[in-house]
Image (cartoon, protein in one colour):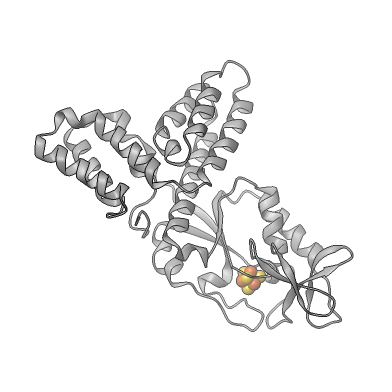
Length: 314
Ligand code: SF4
C-alpha cells in the first residue's frame, strides 16, 4: 500500500472545530481517538465556507415548488441551496486526494441521508440528503461515504474502512498509470475479497480483466464501478467463511494435524458467529509467515484495512 496516509474528508465539527451555528462542535471520540491514528482527515465546513459565519441562524430543509431547499430560520428563510451545492461540486472537483468522506449525520448541509424535511407549515414531511453532501455524492458516486452515527455499528464501520482502503489502492494504481498488467494484478490481489461480498461480482470482474485487448482505461472505469458496487454490499458471514476455507486449503498440507484442526475449528466457529473473523485471520497470517507465499500474502482479504481501527469484530 505504500507509506502514503489515506486521506478522508470529514465534516469539520466532528473533529472538534467550533463551526456549528452556535459556536459549538460535535467532536466524535472514535473518529478523533482511533481513526485519526490511521487516516489523515481533510476537514470541510460548507456553511462556514459559503460565508454564514458563527454564530448563525440554523438551517433546515424545506419543501418548495422548486424541490427541497436549504433555508435559514431567520432573514425570511434566506435560501442557501445554490451556494451549498456549488461549494460541494467545487470540493468534489478539486484535487484533494480523498478516498472517503465522513459526514455529520442529520445536518441539512452535510447529512448524507435521512435529513428531516419540513413543509410550508413547519411540519415534518419526509427526509432527504443534505444539500452539500448530495452535491459531493452526485459528483463522486464511487466515493465511500458514511456518517458518524453509522460508524458506531461495527459492520458498517468495517465495510466503510474496507471500501476506503480499496479506493485508496485504486487511486495509487491510477497515479502510477493504468496498464493491462496493473489492472490484472489489482484484480488478483482482490480475488478473495470480492467473493466475500458477491460471487457474481467476482465472475463479472474476472470477465472484464480477461478481455483487456481494447481500451484499458475504459475497462478500468467499468471495473472500478462494478467493484465498488460489489463492496458496498456487506460481506456475508457464510461467504467469508468459504473464502477462509479456500485460503486455508492452499497451505493446510504444510500444517501438522493439531494446527490444521485449530484453524478449521476457528473458521467453523466464525461461520457460526461464535468467534470474530480476526481469530481465523490471525491464525492464517501466522501460518503464512511460517510458509511464505507472495501471491497469498498479497491478498487484500487477509489484510484489507489498517489494523487497530476497531474493525473486523464480527
Ligand atoms: S454539520 Fe457540516 S455545515 Fe454543520 S457545522 Fe458541521 S461541518 Fe459545518
